[in-house]
Every structure is written in C-alpha cells, then in structure tokens.
Image: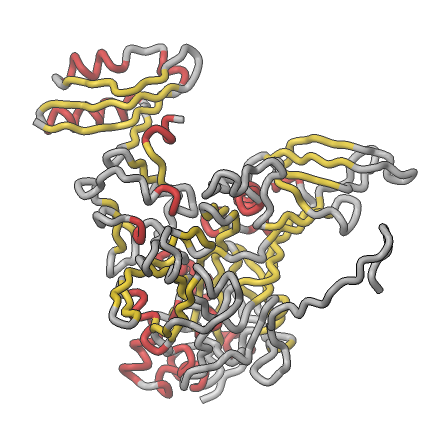
Length: 409
Length: 139
C-alpha cells in the first residue's frame, strides 16, 4: 500500500485524512501490525519542545528618517548583529547584554538575553531598539532610540540554524566534587543526578531516522505558527552509529528552520536562563510525517524502549572534548525517573518538556485533520549516512605573528 | 483551625480602600502581616498569614478575590508560577525532599507544599523563571 503526497493532501483538503501522533501510532502498530496501520493512517505528527541553541530572529526594522546604516544595535540592551544591511539585524538567542555580570560572581543568573527578547516580541510587547553608526552620504543618521513591537516590523523571521537534534546526550557530573552548572542544568557531584533533553519517541527525527520525508521545504509548526525546514542544521552528522532500528545512538541529524514570527504563540517560543551557563531559547516544533508506505509506519512505531542515548561526563570529558560515553541508556529508563550507571542508581530529569511536545503534536494533528495544514514534499532530502556531511572538532593551526594590521592569507 | 499564607497583589486604585478591615471584621479570621509594601497611587503587595476556622479562611480568600486582589499562594517560601512552568523537570532533580515531582501519567510537574523544606535549591535550576522565593516575588 503506497500513497503519494498528492493523495494525502487531497484527503486532508476533504477533511478525511486520518492523523495520529507519534505516540498514538506505537500501540496501533503493536495491535494491528504495520500493514494495516499504514492503510488506515495518512499522517503521523511528531513534536519537540526544549531549549535549542542556534536560534535567532532576523528582523528588518523599516528605514529610519533620515536613513541610517546600523553599525551596532541593541534590543532591550541585548546586542544584535548588524553586518548584513542597513536595517536588517540578527538577534541571536544566546546574546546577553554588554553589561551582564556573566559568571563574575559564580554562578551567574543570566536572567535576560536574546531568547527573552524574542519571546517578548512574539508576545506583542514593546521593546527598545537602540543603534549607532558612523554616518555616510546616503545613510547620514548616526543614532536612534525608539520603542518598537512586532507589528511595526516589516519583516520578523525566526531563523534557527540548528534545531530539533535527532538524539542528544545525557549529562552527569562524574568527577567534580561540587555541583556544576551546564546547559543541561545543575549537575550534582558523584553523579547525583542525570539530565537529558529529547522528546524521545515523539521527536521528529527519531521517527524519520534516515530522513526519507523530512527535508528542505517540509512545512512544519514552528513556535505554533507555520514554518519550514530550510536545510540540514549546522553540526548535522548522519554517520553517527545507529541501532538496529536505524536510530542514531547519539546526537546526529539536525534541522535548520524558519518561520514568520507574526504567526507564532509565545507559549511555544520561550527565553531560557541557565544558571552559571547563559541564555537560550526554548522552541516548539511540530513536524508531520506522511504515511507513504509501511516503512514509514515501522519507523514511526519506534518507542522510548528502542532508543538509546549516551551518558557523558560534563565535569571533564565533555568540556575538554575527550573520552567516551560512560554508558548508554534508553529513553524508557530515563523517563522512569532513574537510570543505573554501573551499580549506582541515578535520578533523571528532562530539560525538554514532554507535556508541551504532546500539546504541539496534538495541535498539528488538529490542524491537519481540519484541513488547515497541507503537507509539502521536500525539494531535497537531508544528507544521510555516507553523504560525507559530518561534524568534527576544529583543527587548530598556528598563526604567524606579523606586523599590526596584516591578516593571514 | 487552619493557617494559610498568601501574597496579595493590590492594584493602585485598591490601595485607597480598607480591604483588610473587611477581611478581619466580616470573616472572623486573624491576619498576621509578615511583609507589606503599600504606597499611595502605586500597586502594592502584602505577605500575610490568615488564621481561623477552615470555612472562614476559605470565605476570606474568596472575599479578597472578589475585591480584585490577585492572590498568590506560596509553598513555604516558594512561589511557583504555573503559567511560566513548561513541566520540563529541571527543578525535580534538585528537590531532595521530593516536593517537586513529575506525574508518571501526564509528565506534568506537581508541587506538594507539605514536603517543601524551603531550601530554595530548585530556584536557580528553573530555566523559565517559574520559581521564585517569596522575597524575590515581593521584589
């Protein structure tokens, strides 16, 4: 039984498509088998919600009168990148105010940054734009300070170079005698706790391990609004070892995504403060998977018990980019509240929100069922295993010290 | 007898009205004001402990709600903003007495204030700013 994108979209338009979430399909396949499920179901919805660094907002503020070519710009004192064009700026999720105390008194709070500005914009709140420049004959203005809000901006696009990691590390503190403060939360000494960050069986790329349907041009729910996959994300690494179900046993595939911020819901795009580490943005993403054949259904039937994640020591091995995982554990074990590492029972906690991921998968299911969200066939699929797209460490090379302004060539 | 702590948020226009007299006089409860910040023409806050028969305490809070006072009920010294909470679980790992826990079915966070020991270890662990001490909340 094979279906095409066109056939599935016809059913969606008529309001007759059968849509289930990636959690619901697990028991369906267990009870009826893949063949019958593939015949009965048209679309599987997947989702994830969690802190996702490598996110940001591409904003065009509209031209000032007289015109100005921003050299430096800040929104609510958070610096944005200006080296693109006169009034185009890119506000990164992890940017912090120039005068943030950082980790000078450890651990720093990192109470406000780019991620929070993005949340405030989407919530419709007013923010303060400040910019300076040098002035030129066609862009004479040198400074501006004004209140703006999302509705004033001609263009506001969430443009995230790396989201929705296919799988991710479990973090523990194995060697430090004190708590350590990481982007995966506070880790108590002697492996006092373990944290992880994935929606597991509900997560988009877990359900499409070989990138058969999720590719460039896939229409998705991004922050509750319509968005698109625009490329494989940065650090996309399809050659990571895979288990017998084809699912990578560590972080592997990633997605670059974009979407119009004006259609988004601030509930699903949230500023994040990680004590002692920095700021980021939590993003909600829902991805539909068309049931083209039985293979798609088999892949979507993956459950937490079938997916393993590597446990890394974040007190030494991870920061120094060395060593090997301490262990591998399944998401079913992680969800149970504790894992066993050797003989030690370690409490687990998630940094991504399963309830919000479920909500987003449900929202997407509702929109497709109601005929309000059509599926798009990707223009290109994402690079898979053997594609030579990979992600390795930076090979540093010594730099010759020369006279003051010379650049190495 | 029952005893319940609450943070009262007054809008500026309410500050002019004798809200607490009505609370004490009409509901037969005693009110212990632990901290207050009330200035004319500004929004105000008050941290109170209300003491009395359970039915009276319940009616007393219903009266405050009706008057337009925003009520926040802390667990010991902890204010949990359920609107901001995404139910991730970052706090759960820090909560040794297991006052904060993940529900096995729904995976949502719950807070059992009888278990809270006011250690505040959960507060810096929350990425979403959903946990504050009463002092931080009163600003």
